[in-house]
Image (cartoon, rainbow, N blue to C red; front, side):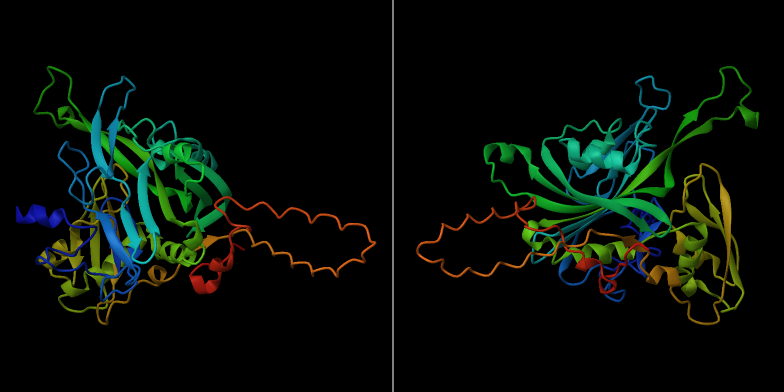
Length: 419
């Protein structure tokens, strides 16, 4: 039971920690997908500073069972995936996964930050991001519409949405699409045409990793059970993953707090196998037995990405196994190994790539407000009446008279413009 509790921990802890202990390491690492979110303050394990509360984040889920997912979240904040591998309207495998993965709420305003990973059904897997964005905007269920083909949950809240702008973005070497949209509850809008709209900035990106579901295929009836070839086999099916990051706020507070969205994006790091291994170097340093400059580990990666130790040099094996328990590399549907060498003769530094923002976007430049015309002198009493002044420019959606400012995209905000 103690071992089970150690596996079902929040995002990522190193080993089994006492009750009340905080998470360790320079980042939160997702338990099923190889991406990390770095701390704002590693000592205090703070993600975004004192003005942001971590409302919820996902715990490790059982990915191939009917058992309920262990979550630190409000009941119902999850998506049920039912996999039909052969299109016979049957359920070949199923899982419940949280949506979103991470939620942060601001203590002073109604600002909200969310990070989510969403599986894409085969019908949507190859759609371009702009098509997925259009579906979010046109469909009354918002981002839930992207669970088409999977989620059978009835959507009780209908949303109306409008697009303000969209442009390309990048997170590391992965291209994405970022857009500013406004939403309102459709029922409220129908009851009150002046209902308040809420503004969001949404990043959509095809993740460089996939989710693997499987079913057990039984051997033909009457086959020899002693023959290894006649044992039950796993039949794997891969599903593409959509990474979504959203910042939402009241319209009047949207621009002042927009840099917080950029700051969060600068903390998100997608990891390949080599990067994940280098990150683990910071986690296994305490397991060094001889502090050798040529300590090494061969990580054994399972078909679904779970990591264990194949062999090591210069480490305590028990400590090492405990330290990597619960981490998940990218699943491939096949077992494989990742080898890494570490210099344990000196303190292990956080990998440089984990300390730098890899996010880039190009927001539209703010329109220059025209100068107000000087008041004309009073015309002579016999002059013709002055023509009426032209009507003021129509406000932008949400009550703004100009498009969003691009000042939040300055280097000081943690992001740089796309070259």
